[in-house]
Image (cartoon, rainbow, N blue to C red; front, side, top):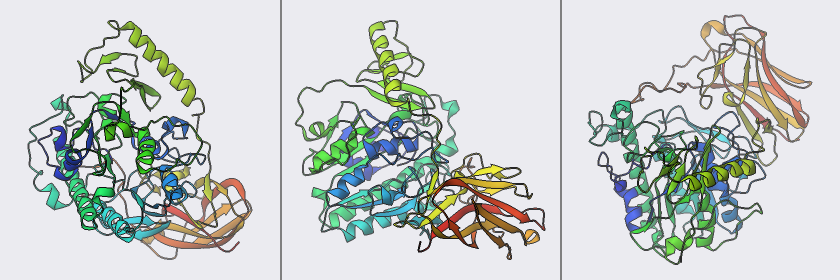
Length: 554
Protein backbone atom coordinates (compact mmCIF):
# COMPACT_ATOMS: atom_id res chain seq x y z
CA UNK A 1 0.00 0.00 0.00
CA UNK A 2 0.99 3.63 -0.49
CA UNK A 3 1.77 5.92 2.47
CA UNK A 4 0.29 3.60 5.10
CA UNK A 5 2.32 3.67 8.30
CA UNK A 6 3.21 0.93 10.75
CA UNK A 7 0.56 2.30 13.08
CA UNK A 8 -2.28 2.22 10.55
CA UNK A 9 -3.34 -1.34 11.41
CA UNK A 10 -5.32 -2.64 14.35
CA UNK A 11 -2.97 -5.63 14.60
CA UNK A 12 -0.30 -3.18 15.75
CA UNK A 13 -2.50 -1.82 18.50
CA UNK A 14 -4.28 1.08 16.84
CA UNK A 15 -7.82 1.19 18.22
CA UNK A 16 -8.78 4.12 15.95
CA UNK A 17 -9.62 1.70 13.13
CA UNK A 18 -10.40 -1.93 12.46
CA UNK A 19 -8.45 -3.96 9.88
CA UNK A 20 -9.49 -7.57 10.50
CA UNK A 21 -8.60 -8.97 7.08
CA UNK A 22 -5.08 -7.58 7.05
CA UNK A 23 -4.70 -8.57 10.70
CA UNK A 24 -5.66 -12.13 9.78
CA UNK A 25 -2.46 -12.45 7.76
CA UNK A 26 -0.53 -12.00 11.00
CA UNK A 27 -2.75 -14.36 12.96
CA UNK A 28 -2.66 -17.03 10.25
CA UNK A 29 0.94 -16.45 9.23
CA UNK A 30 3.95 -14.37 10.23
CA UNK A 31 4.40 -10.82 11.44
CA UNK A 32 7.73 -8.99 11.25
CA UNK A 33 8.31 -6.77 14.24
CA UNK A 34 10.98 -4.67 12.54
CA UNK A 35 10.64 -4.50 8.75
CA UNK A 36 12.17 -1.60 6.86
CA UNK A 37 11.66 0.15 3.55
CA UNK A 38 12.77 3.48 2.10
CA UNK A 39 11.26 6.87 3.08
CA UNK A 40 9.30 7.36 -0.18
CA UNK A 41 7.51 5.43 -2.89
CA UNK A 42 9.67 4.67 -5.92
CA UNK A 43 12.84 3.66 -4.03
CA UNK A 44 10.93 1.05 -2.01
CA UNK A 45 9.19 -0.33 -5.10
CA UNK A 46 12.53 -0.66 -6.87
CA UNK A 47 13.95 -2.59 -3.92
CA UNK A 48 11.04 -5.01 -3.91
CA UNK A 49 11.52 -5.55 -7.63
CA UNK A 50 15.29 -6.05 -7.60
CA UNK A 51 16.41 -7.14 -4.13
CA UNK A 52 18.98 -4.33 -4.39
CA UNK A 53 19.26 -0.91 -2.81
CA UNK A 54 17.59 1.72 -4.98
CA UNK A 55 20.75 3.80 -5.07
CA UNK A 56 22.31 1.08 -7.23
CA UNK A 57 19.46 0.97 -9.74
CA UNK A 58 19.09 4.51 -11.04
CA UNK A 59 16.36 5.77 -8.70
CA UNK A 60 16.98 9.46 -8.00
CA UNK A 61 13.53 10.81 -7.26
CA UNK A 62 9.80 10.28 -7.58
CA UNK A 63 8.89 12.08 -10.82
CA UNK A 64 9.98 13.45 -14.20
CA UNK A 65 11.98 10.31 -15.02
CA UNK A 66 14.01 10.25 -11.82
CA UNK A 67 11.94 7.29 -10.60
CA UNK A 68 12.96 4.96 -13.44
CA UNK A 69 14.51 1.58 -12.72
CA UNK A 70 17.68 1.13 -14.77
CA UNK A 71 17.18 -1.13 -17.75
CA UNK A 72 20.15 -3.26 -16.67
CA UNK A 73 18.22 -4.37 -13.57
CA UNK A 74 16.24 -7.63 -13.53
CA UNK A 75 13.06 -7.89 -11.53
CA UNK A 76 11.31 -10.39 -9.31
CA UNK A 77 8.60 -10.65 -11.96
CA UNK A 78 11.16 -11.71 -14.56
CA UNK A 79 12.29 -14.51 -12.26
CA UNK A 80 8.75 -15.79 -11.81
CA UNK A 81 7.94 -15.32 -15.47
CA UNK A 82 11.01 -17.33 -16.46
CA UNK A 83 9.83 -20.09 -14.13
CA UNK A 84 6.51 -20.35 -15.98
CA UNK A 85 4.34 -18.15 -13.79
CA UNK A 86 1.64 -15.90 -15.20
CA UNK A 87 2.54 -12.41 -13.98
CA UNK A 88 0.30 -9.40 -13.47
CA UNK A 89 0.67 -5.94 -11.96
CA UNK A 90 -2.44 -4.00 -10.94
CA UNK A 91 -1.95 -0.55 -9.47
CA UNK A 92 0.70 2.11 -9.04
CA UNK A 93 3.94 1.17 -10.82
CA UNK A 94 6.12 4.27 -10.26
CA UNK A 95 9.36 2.88 -11.69
CA UNK A 96 9.15 4.17 -15.26
CA UNK A 97 6.40 5.02 -17.73
CA UNK A 98 7.65 4.58 -21.27
CA UNK A 99 8.64 1.17 -22.63
CA UNK A 100 11.08 -0.50 -21.88
CA UNK A 101 10.75 1.01 -18.39
CA UNK A 102 7.10 -0.01 -18.49
CA UNK A 103 5.98 -2.98 -16.34
CA UNK A 104 5.21 -5.10 -19.41
CA UNK A 105 8.91 -4.92 -20.26
CA UNK A 106 9.96 -5.78 -16.70
CA UNK A 107 8.43 -9.22 -16.40
CA UNK A 108 4.70 -8.54 -16.16
CA UNK A 109 2.45 -10.11 -18.76
CA UNK A 110 -0.44 -7.81 -17.84
CA UNK A 111 -0.58 -4.31 -16.39
CA UNK A 112 -3.59 -2.29 -15.30
CA UNK A 113 -3.20 0.91 -13.31
CA UNK A 114 -0.95 3.92 -13.74
CA UNK A 115 2.79 4.40 -14.00
CA UNK A 116 3.00 7.83 -12.39
CA UNK A 117 3.86 8.60 -8.79
CA UNK A 118 0.34 9.61 -7.83
CA UNK A 119 -2.98 9.95 -9.57
CA UNK A 120 -5.27 12.96 -9.51
CA UNK A 121 -8.69 11.37 -9.10
CA UNK A 122 -9.83 8.04 -7.65
CA UNK A 123 -13.35 7.61 -9.05
CA UNK A 124 -14.10 6.44 -12.61
CA UNK A 125 -10.97 8.09 -13.94
CA UNK A 126 -8.51 7.35 -16.72
CA UNK A 127 -6.15 4.43 -16.14
CA UNK A 128 -3.92 2.35 -18.39
CA UNK A 129 -4.19 -1.23 -19.61
CA UNK A 130 -1.09 -2.66 -21.29
CA UNK A 131 -0.07 0.71 -22.70
CA UNK A 132 -3.46 2.09 -23.76
CA UNK A 133 -5.55 4.62 -21.85
CA UNK A 134 -8.86 3.21 -20.62
CA UNK A 135 -11.74 4.28 -18.42
CA UNK A 136 -11.49 3.14 -14.81
CA UNK A 137 -14.47 1.54 -13.13
CA UNK A 138 -15.51 2.93 -9.76
CA UNK A 139 -13.20 3.61 -6.83
CA UNK A 140 -9.65 2.90 -7.88
CA UNK A 141 -8.67 0.44 -5.14
CA UNK A 142 -11.86 -1.56 -5.71
CA UNK A 143 -11.17 -1.48 -9.46
CA UNK A 144 -7.57 -2.65 -9.09
CA UNK A 145 -8.71 -5.48 -6.85
CA UNK A 146 -11.36 -6.50 -9.39
CA UNK A 147 -8.68 -6.80 -12.05
CA UNK A 148 -6.39 -8.81 -9.79
CA UNK A 149 -9.22 -11.17 -8.86
CA UNK A 150 -10.07 -11.70 -12.53
CA UNK A 151 -6.41 -12.46 -13.26
CA UNK A 152 -6.27 -15.00 -10.43
CA UNK A 153 -9.48 -16.60 -11.63
CA UNK A 154 -8.12 -16.85 -15.17
CA UNK A 155 -4.87 -18.46 -14.00
CA UNK A 156 -6.26 -20.61 -11.19
CA UNK A 157 -4.95 -23.81 -12.76
CA UNK A 158 -1.36 -22.61 -13.22
CA UNK A 159 1.20 -20.78 -11.09
CA UNK A 160 0.72 -17.02 -10.89
CA UNK A 161 2.55 -14.02 -9.45
CA UNK A 162 0.36 -11.01 -8.70
CA UNK A 163 1.75 -7.61 -7.71
CA UNK A 164 -1.08 -5.45 -6.34
CA UNK A 165 0.35 -2.02 -5.42
CA UNK A 166 -2.55 0.09 -4.16
CA UNK A 167 -2.23 3.87 -4.38
CA UNK A 168 -3.91 4.66 -1.07
CA UNK A 169 -3.86 6.21 1.50
CA UNK A 170 -1.67 8.51 -0.64
CA UNK A 171 -3.28 11.87 -1.28
CA UNK A 172 -5.56 13.17 -2.69
CA UNK A 173 -7.59 11.91 0.23
CA UNK A 174 -10.58 10.38 -1.51
CA UNK A 175 -12.59 7.42 -0.23
CA UNK A 176 -16.18 6.20 -0.71
CA UNK A 177 -18.82 7.51 1.68
CA UNK A 178 -19.44 4.05 3.11
CA UNK A 179 -15.95 4.09 4.64
CA UNK A 180 -15.71 7.77 5.48
CA UNK A 181 -19.01 8.18 7.31
CA UNK A 182 -17.91 6.54 10.55
CA UNK A 183 -14.76 8.67 10.69
CA UNK A 184 -16.17 12.01 9.53
CA UNK A 185 -16.69 13.30 13.07
CA UNK A 186 -14.54 10.81 14.95
CA UNK A 187 -12.20 11.92 17.73
CA UNK A 188 -9.32 9.41 17.49
CA UNK A 189 -8.38 8.08 20.90
CA UNK A 190 -4.82 7.37 19.82
CA UNK A 191 -2.88 10.40 18.61
CA UNK A 192 0.53 11.31 17.30
CA UNK A 193 3.20 11.68 19.96
CA UNK A 194 3.06 15.46 19.41
CA UNK A 195 -0.71 15.92 19.13
CA UNK A 196 -0.49 19.58 18.15
CA UNK A 197 1.17 18.49 14.89
CA UNK A 198 -1.69 16.20 13.92
CA UNK A 199 -4.25 17.24 11.32
CA UNK A 200 -7.32 15.34 12.47
CA UNK A 201 -9.11 15.75 9.13
CA UNK A 202 -6.17 14.06 7.44
CA UNK A 203 -6.11 11.31 10.06
CA UNK A 204 -9.82 10.61 9.62
CA UNK A 205 -9.49 10.34 5.86
CA UNK A 206 -6.43 8.10 6.10
CA UNK A 207 -8.14 5.75 8.54
CA UNK A 208 -11.15 5.46 6.26
CA UNK A 209 -8.91 4.71 3.29
CA UNK A 210 -7.10 2.03 5.31
CA UNK A 211 -10.41 0.36 6.14
CA UNK A 212 -11.26 0.32 2.43
CA UNK A 213 -7.91 -1.35 1.78
CA UNK A 214 -8.73 -3.91 4.43
CA UNK A 215 -12.06 -4.73 2.79
CA UNK A 216 -10.30 -5.31 -0.52
CA UNK A 217 -7.72 -7.53 1.13
CA UNK A 218 -10.69 -9.47 2.48
CA UNK A 219 -12.04 -9.88 -1.04
CA UNK A 220 -8.67 -11.19 -2.20
CA UNK A 221 -8.43 -13.73 0.62
CA UNK A 222 -12.01 -14.82 0.02
CA UNK A 223 -11.25 -15.42 -3.66
CA UNK A 224 -8.31 -17.65 -2.74
CA UNK A 225 -10.62 -19.61 -0.46
CA UNK A 226 -13.31 -19.91 -3.12
CA UNK A 227 -10.80 -21.23 -5.66
CA UNK A 228 -9.26 -23.59 -3.08
CA UNK A 229 -5.90 -21.85 -3.54
CA UNK A 230 -5.32 -20.43 -0.06
CA UNK A 231 -3.14 -23.28 1.18
CA UNK A 232 -0.66 -23.07 -1.70
CA UNK A 233 -0.58 -19.28 -2.16
CA UNK A 234 1.94 -17.03 -0.42
CA UNK A 235 0.38 -13.68 0.48
CA UNK A 236 2.64 -10.78 1.45
CA UNK A 237 1.37 -7.44 2.77
CA UNK A 238 3.62 -4.45 3.33
CA UNK A 239 3.73 -0.70 2.73
CA UNK A 240 6.14 1.56 0.90
CA UNK A 241 7.03 4.10 3.62
CA UNK A 242 5.84 5.66 6.84
CA UNK A 243 2.56 7.57 7.21
CA UNK A 244 1.88 10.61 5.04
CA UNK A 245 0.77 12.72 7.99
CA UNK A 246 1.43 13.09 11.69
CA UNK A 247 -0.84 10.45 13.24
CA UNK A 248 -0.46 7.61 15.72
CA UNK A 249 2.60 5.54 14.87
CA UNK A 250 3.62 3.92 18.17
CA UNK A 251 5.56 7.00 19.23
CA UNK A 252 8.23 6.57 16.56
CA UNK A 253 10.09 9.63 15.32
CA UNK A 254 9.55 10.69 11.73
CA UNK A 255 7.02 10.07 8.97
CA UNK A 256 7.07 9.69 5.20
CA UNK A 257 10.22 11.27 3.76
CA UNK A 258 12.24 10.74 6.94
CA UNK A 259 15.04 8.20 7.37
CA UNK A 260 14.12 7.90 11.06
CA UNK A 261 12.29 4.86 12.40
CA UNK A 262 8.80 6.26 11.81
CA UNK A 263 9.56 6.97 8.17
CA UNK A 264 10.88 3.53 7.29
CA UNK A 265 9.55 0.91 9.70
CA UNK A 266 6.37 -0.53 8.20
CA UNK A 267 4.06 -3.53 8.48
CA UNK A 268 5.09 -6.79 6.83
CA UNK A 269 2.82 -9.79 7.13
CA UNK A 270 3.29 -13.09 5.27
CA UNK A 271 0.83 -15.96 5.14
CA UNK A 272 1.53 -19.36 3.64
CA UNK A 273 -0.44 -22.12 5.36
CA UNK A 274 1.68 -24.82 3.76
CA UNK A 275 4.86 -23.78 5.54
CA UNK A 276 4.40 -20.85 7.96
CA UNK A 277 2.98 -21.56 11.41
CA UNK A 278 0.06 -19.34 12.43
CA UNK A 279 1.00 -16.55 14.81
CA UNK A 280 4.70 -16.58 13.94
CA UNK A 281 6.44 -13.43 15.17
CA UNK A 282 9.82 -12.52 13.73
CA UNK A 283 11.89 -10.14 15.84
CA UNK A 284 14.91 -10.11 13.52
CA UNK A 285 15.20 -7.02 11.33
CA UNK A 286 14.37 -7.43 7.65
CA UNK A 287 13.74 -5.19 4.67
CA UNK A 288 12.08 -4.83 1.28
CA UNK A 289 15.30 -5.97 -0.41
CA UNK A 290 14.79 -9.35 1.27
CA UNK A 291 11.50 -10.14 -0.45
CA UNK A 292 12.95 -11.19 -3.82
CA UNK A 293 15.40 -13.75 -2.42
CA UNK A 294 12.84 -14.91 0.14
CA UNK A 295 9.94 -15.46 -2.25
CA UNK A 296 12.06 -17.11 -4.91
CA UNK A 297 13.49 -19.51 -2.29
CA UNK A 298 10.07 -20.32 -0.85
CA UNK A 299 8.78 -20.95 -4.37
CA UNK A 300 11.78 -23.00 -5.40
CA UNK A 301 12.66 -20.94 -8.47
CA UNK A 302 15.90 -19.51 -9.81
CA UNK A 303 16.70 -15.81 -9.63
CA UNK A 304 17.11 -14.23 -13.06
CA UNK A 305 20.04 -11.83 -13.27
CA UNK A 306 23.65 -11.83 -12.25
CA UNK A 307 23.96 -8.67 -10.16
CA UNK A 308 24.62 -9.27 -6.45
CA UNK A 309 21.66 -8.75 -4.16
CA UNK A 310 21.64 -6.59 -1.06
CA UNK A 311 18.76 -8.56 0.40
CA UNK A 312 18.96 -11.96 2.01
CA UNK A 313 16.42 -14.75 2.20
CA UNK A 314 14.53 -14.77 5.46
CA UNK A 315 12.76 -17.99 4.51
CA UNK A 316 14.40 -19.87 7.42
CA UNK A 317 12.86 -17.39 9.86
CA UNK A 318 9.43 -17.86 8.30
CA UNK A 319 9.54 -21.64 8.26
CA UNK A 320 11.14 -22.07 11.67
CA UNK A 321 14.30 -23.65 10.29
CA UNK A 322 16.82 -20.99 11.26
CA UNK A 323 19.60 -21.43 13.73
CA UNK A 324 21.53 -18.51 15.23
CA UNK A 325 20.84 -15.38 13.16
CA UNK A 326 23.70 -12.99 12.47
CA UNK A 327 23.12 -9.29 13.13
CA UNK A 328 23.11 -7.13 10.03
CA UNK A 329 22.85 -3.53 8.89
CA UNK A 330 19.95 -2.12 6.86
CA UNK A 331 20.44 1.26 5.17
CA UNK A 332 17.84 3.86 4.30
CA UNK A 333 18.38 6.85 2.06
CA UNK A 334 16.48 9.84 0.80
CA UNK A 335 17.45 13.40 -0.20
CA UNK A 336 21.13 12.62 0.49
CA UNK A 337 20.31 11.58 4.05
CA UNK A 338 21.45 8.11 5.08
CA UNK A 339 20.53 6.21 8.22
CA UNK A 340 21.56 2.70 9.24
CA UNK A 341 19.71 0.21 11.44
CA UNK A 342 21.02 -2.81 13.30
CA UNK A 343 18.99 -5.12 15.50
CA UNK A 344 19.45 -2.78 18.45
CA UNK A 345 20.67 0.60 17.20
CA UNK A 346 19.87 3.28 14.66
CA UNK A 347 22.43 5.83 13.55
CA UNK A 348 20.48 8.75 12.08
CA UNK A 349 21.51 10.95 9.16
CA UNK A 350 23.19 13.43 11.54
CA UNK A 351 25.35 10.76 13.13
CA UNK A 352 23.33 10.49 16.34
CA UNK A 353 22.99 7.04 17.86
CA UNK A 354 19.82 5.62 19.40
CA UNK A 355 19.33 2.42 21.38
CA UNK A 356 15.95 1.36 20.06
CA UNK A 357 15.58 -1.48 22.53
CA UNK A 358 15.47 1.08 25.34
CA UNK A 359 14.35 4.14 23.36
CA UNK A 360 12.07 3.22 20.43
CA UNK A 361 11.07 6.85 20.00
CA UNK A 362 14.65 8.02 19.30
CA UNK A 363 14.59 10.64 22.03
CA UNK A 364 18.07 10.28 23.52
CA UNK A 365 21.39 10.24 21.67
CA UNK A 366 23.69 7.60 23.20
CA UNK A 367 26.69 8.07 20.91
CA UNK A 368 28.90 9.22 23.76
CA UNK A 369 27.91 6.20 25.84
CA UNK A 370 28.65 3.78 22.97
CA UNK A 371 31.44 5.48 21.00
CA UNK A 372 32.66 2.29 19.34
CA UNK A 373 29.19 1.46 18.05
CA UNK A 374 28.70 4.99 16.76
CA UNK A 375 32.08 5.01 15.06
CA UNK A 376 31.52 1.64 13.39
CA UNK A 377 28.14 2.66 12.05
CA UNK A 378 29.42 6.01 10.79
CA UNK A 379 32.15 4.18 8.92
CA UNK A 380 29.57 1.76 7.54
CA UNK A 381 27.46 4.65 6.23
CA UNK A 382 30.51 6.22 4.56
CA UNK A 383 31.37 2.91 2.90
CA UNK A 384 27.76 2.37 1.79
CA UNK A 385 27.69 5.80 0.21
CA UNK A 386 30.92 5.03 -1.63
CA UNK A 387 29.68 1.66 -2.85
CA UNK A 388 26.13 2.55 -3.88
CA UNK A 389 25.89 6.27 -4.60
CA UNK A 390 28.92 7.13 -6.72
CA UNK A 391 26.92 6.92 -9.97
CA UNK A 392 23.87 8.74 -8.62
CA UNK A 393 24.47 12.05 -10.36
CA UNK A 394 21.93 14.06 -12.39
CA UNK A 395 19.57 11.93 -14.45
CA UNK A 396 20.45 12.37 -18.11
CA UNK A 397 18.50 9.39 -19.48
CA UNK A 398 16.19 10.30 -22.39
CA UNK A 399 12.59 9.15 -22.65
CA UNK A 400 12.40 6.22 -25.07
CA UNK A 401 9.97 6.15 -27.99
CA UNK A 402 9.12 3.64 -30.69
CA UNK A 403 9.52 -0.05 -29.90
CA UNK A 404 7.88 -2.50 -32.29
CA UNK A 405 6.71 -4.69 -29.42
CA UNK A 406 5.14 -1.66 -27.70
CA UNK A 407 4.29 0.83 -30.47
CA UNK A 408 2.40 3.44 -28.41
CA UNK A 409 4.32 5.90 -26.26
CA UNK A 410 2.77 8.55 -24.03
CA UNK A 411 4.89 11.56 -23.15
CA UNK A 412 3.06 13.20 -20.23
CA UNK A 413 3.51 16.74 -19.01
CA UNK A 414 5.32 15.39 -15.95
CA UNK A 415 8.22 14.32 -18.20
CA UNK A 416 8.37 17.49 -20.26
CA UNK A 417 10.13 20.84 -19.81
CA UNK A 418 8.29 24.16 -19.95
CA UNK A 419 9.81 27.20 -21.66
CA UNK A 420 8.69 30.82 -21.70
CA UNK A 421 5.31 31.46 -20.13
CA UNK A 422 4.35 27.80 -19.89
CA UNK A 423 4.07 26.46 -16.34
CA UNK A 424 2.91 23.29 -14.64
CA UNK A 425 -0.53 23.18 -13.10
CA UNK A 426 1.16 22.23 -9.84
CA UNK A 427 4.66 22.01 -8.38
CA UNK A 428 4.24 18.24 -7.99
CA UNK A 429 4.73 16.98 -11.56
CA UNK A 430 3.14 13.53 -11.43
CA UNK A 431 -0.50 14.31 -12.25
CA UNK A 432 0.14 17.79 -13.61
CA UNK A 433 -0.51 19.39 -17.00
CA UNK A 434 1.04 22.36 -18.80
CA UNK A 435 -0.82 25.66 -18.82
CA UNK A 436 -0.06 29.36 -19.36
CA UNK A 437 0.87 28.86 -23.05
CA UNK A 438 0.25 32.21 -24.69
CA UNK A 439 3.14 33.18 -26.99
CA UNK A 440 4.72 31.88 -30.19
CA UNK A 441 8.07 31.93 -28.39
CA UNK A 442 6.81 29.50 -25.74
CA UNK A 443 7.86 25.87 -26.00
CA UNK A 444 7.22 22.50 -24.41
CA UNK A 445 9.98 19.96 -24.97
CA UNK A 446 10.81 16.34 -24.23
CA UNK A 447 14.25 14.75 -24.37
CA UNK A 448 13.50 11.59 -26.36
CA UNK A 449 15.35 8.76 -28.00
CA UNK A 450 13.65 7.12 -30.97
CA UNK A 451 14.37 3.40 -31.00
CA UNK A 452 12.90 2.57 -34.39
CA UNK A 453 12.94 4.76 -37.50
CA UNK A 454 9.51 4.94 -39.05
CA UNK A 455 6.24 6.77 -39.43
CA UNK A 456 4.60 7.92 -36.22
CA UNK A 457 1.07 9.08 -35.64
CA UNK A 458 1.21 12.14 -33.36
CA UNK A 459 -1.68 13.12 -31.10
CA UNK A 460 -1.92 16.01 -28.63
CA UNK A 461 -4.18 15.69 -25.57
CA UNK A 462 -5.53 19.20 -24.95
CA UNK A 463 -8.13 21.46 -23.42
CA UNK A 464 -9.07 24.81 -24.95
CA UNK A 465 -11.46 27.63 -24.10
CA UNK A 466 -14.04 28.71 -26.70
CA UNK A 467 -12.40 32.11 -27.09
CA UNK A 468 -9.01 30.51 -27.86
CA UNK A 469 -10.08 28.16 -30.67
CA UNK A 470 -8.00 28.38 -33.84
CA UNK A 471 -4.39 28.09 -32.70
CA UNK A 472 -2.02 26.26 -35.05
CA UNK A 473 0.35 23.93 -33.25
CA UNK A 474 3.54 22.29 -34.51
CA UNK A 475 5.30 19.23 -33.15
CA UNK A 476 8.86 18.82 -34.41
CA UNK A 477 11.75 16.39 -34.09
CA UNK A 478 14.89 17.14 -36.08
CA UNK A 479 13.73 17.82 -39.65
CA UNK A 480 10.32 16.24 -39.22
CA UNK A 481 7.25 18.22 -38.21
CA UNK A 482 3.47 17.96 -38.15
CA UNK A 483 0.92 20.70 -37.64
CA UNK A 484 -2.64 20.81 -36.45
CA UNK A 485 -5.24 23.46 -35.83
CA UNK A 486 -7.44 23.51 -32.76
CA UNK A 487 -10.83 23.57 -34.44
CA UNK A 488 -13.01 22.71 -31.46
CA UNK A 489 -13.24 24.02 -27.94
CA UNK A 490 -12.90 21.58 -25.06
CA UNK A 491 -13.01 23.31 -21.69
CA UNK A 492 -14.14 20.79 -19.06
CA UNK A 493 -14.28 21.60 -15.35
CA UNK A 494 -11.66 20.55 -12.87
CA UNK A 495 -12.37 17.27 -11.14
CA UNK A 496 -11.55 16.15 -7.63
CA UNK A 497 -12.46 18.91 -5.19
CA UNK A 498 -15.95 17.53 -4.53
CA UNK A 499 -14.53 14.13 -3.58
CA UNK A 500 -11.54 15.33 -1.54
CA UNK A 501 -11.93 14.80 2.19
CA UNK A 502 -9.00 17.14 2.84
CA UNK A 503 -7.82 20.04 0.64
CA UNK A 504 -5.16 18.62 -1.64
CA UNK A 505 -1.64 19.84 -2.36
CA UNK A 506 -1.50 18.22 -5.80
CA UNK A 507 -3.01 19.42 -9.06
CA UNK A 508 -6.67 19.05 -9.78
CA UNK A 509 -7.34 17.21 -13.01
CA UNK A 510 -9.66 17.47 -15.98
CA UNK A 511 -10.58 15.53 -19.09
CA UNK A 512 -8.21 16.04 -22.03
CA UNK A 513 -9.30 15.48 -25.62
CA UNK A 514 -7.07 13.95 -28.34
CA UNK A 515 -6.16 16.22 -31.26
CA UNK A 516 -4.55 14.34 -34.18
CA UNK A 517 -1.57 16.29 -35.50
CA UNK A 518 -0.69 13.97 -38.37
CA UNK A 519 1.94 11.40 -39.28
CA UNK A 520 5.61 12.30 -39.03
CA UNK A 521 8.71 10.38 -40.09
CA UNK A 522 11.12 9.98 -37.18
CA UNK A 523 14.67 8.77 -37.59
CA UNK A 524 16.30 6.70 -34.88
CA UNK A 525 18.38 8.57 -32.32
CA UNK A 526 18.21 11.08 -29.52
CA UNK A 527 17.05 14.67 -29.84
CA UNK A 528 14.50 17.18 -28.59
CA UNK A 529 10.82 16.79 -29.37
CA UNK A 530 9.40 20.30 -29.39
CA UNK A 531 5.85 21.64 -29.26
CA UNK A 532 5.17 25.26 -30.26
CA UNK A 533 2.36 27.46 -31.57
CA UNK A 534 2.62 29.10 -35.01
CA UNK A 535 -0.61 31.14 -34.78
CA UNK A 536 -2.50 32.24 -31.66
CA UNK A 537 -5.79 33.99 -32.42
CA UNK A 538 -6.88 34.11 -28.77
CA UNK A 539 -5.16 34.91 -25.49
CA UNK A 540 -3.93 31.35 -24.95
CA UNK A 541 -3.10 28.27 -26.94
CA UNK A 542 -4.13 25.09 -25.09
CA UNK A 543 -3.42 23.20 -21.89
CA UNK A 544 -1.42 20.01 -22.49
CA UNK A 545 -1.56 16.64 -20.69
CA UNK A 546 0.13 14.21 -23.11
CA UNK A 547 1.75 13.75 -26.46
CA UNK A 548 1.02 10.30 -27.88
CA UNK A 549 3.30 8.83 -30.52
CA UNK A 550 2.27 5.59 -32.19
CA UNK A 551 4.73 3.71 -34.38
CA UNK A 552 3.07 2.65 -37.61
CA UNK A 553 4.56 -0.04 -39.85
CA UNK A 554 8.24 0.97 -40.20
